[in-house]
Amino acid sequence: MLQKLDPSIPVYNVAGNHDVGNVPTPETVAAFHTAIGRDYYAFSQGDIFGIMLDSNLIRAPQGDPDAARQQEVWLEKTLASAKSNSNQQVVIFQHIPYFIQDPNEAEGYFNIPQPARRKYLDVLEQAGVTYVFAGHYHRNAMGVDGPLTEVVTGAVGMPLGGSLSGFRIVTVEGRKLNSIWYCFGGIPNQVDPRKPSSTPCPQ
Image (cartoon, rainbow, N blue to C red; front, side, top):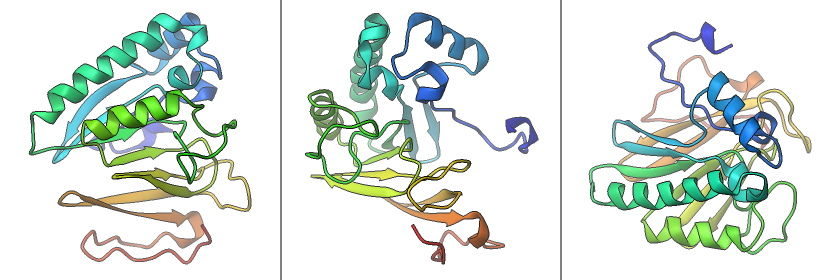
């Protein structure tokens, strides 16, 4: 599917649980590296400094504790370095959300368990991160934890809970990120970033 995209469009992959497993192992992580690329990394695009995390290692580090620790150390160093550049906004992208709507909600299949949830949220917020984008929930949701907003985007191929297939477009307006989710039946012919249209589709 990615080969059908215009090559001028950059693609940044995020490792999901169906890629490396609900409990990643050295073998599944290595297979992802071979087939797709790094499971955690950073990129710069305009005023955005994106950090892609392997949230599967955060949720279930026991299968590959060395990789989980290496990612944690890398994240702390990367955040410290990024904080020195005030011209770019750090945005986190990962598959499994820390929470669906409330940072104090109960642990379940669709979120990061405590205490890892609180640990990583504190690390991100102390570094000045205000946006996290995630998926995994197969429907749309959003929640806040202090200054941090977490946006959970529904599925393209297998929506759950009465949601529809669709995708999210995010526009950058200074330090503010405006996002709108479009179902496949409600995609506009054109999108003006200065005047984002609302979607008629149920969330």
